[in-house]
Length: 167
Image (cartoon, rainbow, N blue to C red; front, side):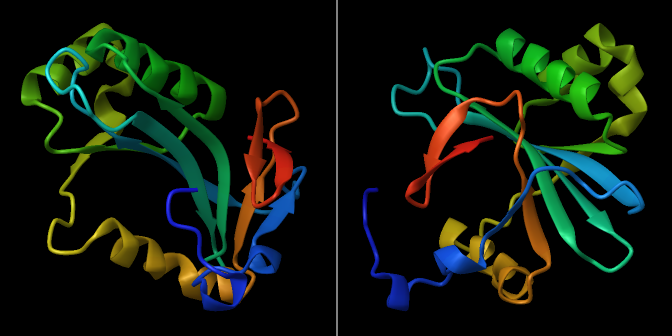
């Protein structure tokens, strides 16, 4: 961790983060694939990771996070392939991609993967807020036990809040 914070000072308490093995079968959830683009490695030496997260929300406004993928030093083509793989795995209703992901790349995605065409929506990044401010929007969900992280039995093991989790 780059800037560790004592548990009592942190916005999210480790005990408030809930993990589940499976999503209960009787819950109707609408799934979304959210995409955070990054600079192409040869253009930006210190670019962020390319990332995708599949999250869903049910009728009670409970959030479920079930798929996370992040890659560093990835080409645009590799990232388009990653989006396609996450789509095939989770079948989200919509795919939200930051508008800064050049129109050409979005066109290539829609052309190379035509079945994604009607699912893609462009999202404007909130540049007036820091990443820290944006993540705090989840705090009420976490404190009220309305956010679950679904572990993936086939997932890769990662250290998360002092434990090893399959994500």
